[in-house]
Length: 192
Ligand SMILES: [Fe+2]
Ligand SMILES: [Fe+2]
Image (cartoon, rainbow, N blue to C red; front, side, top):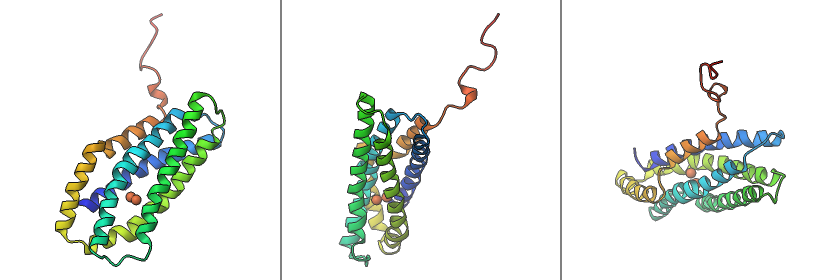
């Protein structure tokens, strides 16, 4: 697995978190209870693992593409790098809104749901551009030895943040509703 495979695989892990968050936002919009602590965890996942780890790796790729003078569309890397910053702003807004709800100062989840929606909308388009325009060009034009060295730098970034894959799985489990059959132990509970 080379550096670009790592980034593509991380997109799939992040995608699964987007799906559980999106379902939670839809529930909140329908007036159902949504857990502010789960939204707080999701915001922390975005800041630590998406921004701190995945985006840090992508910045290594982008800088390498610039250094090798790859024929990128004008403004493309500025756009995707800028979206990393905007994504962090949405994640911070989501974190602050969730904290306000947990402190009891805020009872309406709209601000938290809006921030989550902003993040979801931005990230889907962002990932699409990277996979359609940035990664294929890097795959075509960067030498294999460069991708190998990049993989080593990615490993260092991953080591300082922890595993994005494991964090994404933990997020999915946290958001997943408990199946009805697991709410109570199987078999008779009372002996009378
Ligand atoms: Fe990105
Ligand atoms: Fe990405």
